Length: 286
Image 1 (cartoon, rainbow, N blue to C red):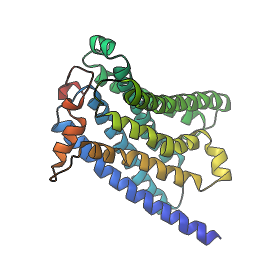
Image 2: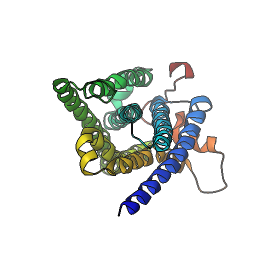
Image 3: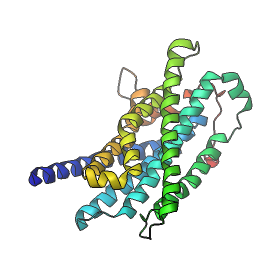
Image 4: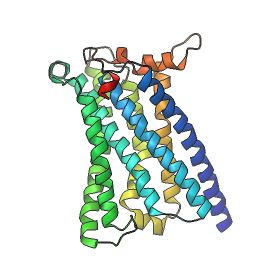
């Protein structure tokens, strides 16, 4: 019986590594082309930062998994650092989904009142706010090799789980509302990033929620289901790695094979932005 669990653990470990490495390549390509070669619009700025957050999460997951396997031990510090990348991506996805949804529901208000560099400012704030939001409860609960402060741990951890679940609800809810609006009510052309938001929301619901659940119930799940963490990590890697495939699929067209840059330009470039009056942001604004 123990031999079977050990074998399954090794299979999950190697599959996680394979998925993580594939996701690093995919998000690296998105980051390279979108950051340097493709003209960016307001929404594609979110995609750029989301690819960076996924790259951070997958890189930490792959490196720390190899270290833990080599040392044959688990370190909560590695989990916390990895979770910072995951939480940053969740923040960015929620902001991206909500803004695209609002731009379709209220196009007149959105086009007239949106500041030019709002996307870059929002992404910068989210990158700055996420580490404290993760590290404060982790430190209070003793995950950073410090003593446990029970009262502070309960308060900070409850707030952390609440805002993580709220972000997941915002991301999934905005994707659902956008899908219903585009399918039933809107007379405008469907925005090309519509598929990216729907796919990301579905991936979050199916593959991202177990990782959030493990963050919220880590002591209980570690005791009752020791194999839950590697499975949740695998699903989280699928969540971060599959996003570039959504972009590539959205940008492909029937016919001769086209360069990757052209495919991503069609899916994510400035011309793909609907409802934002074709605004584009220079590299210096990111």
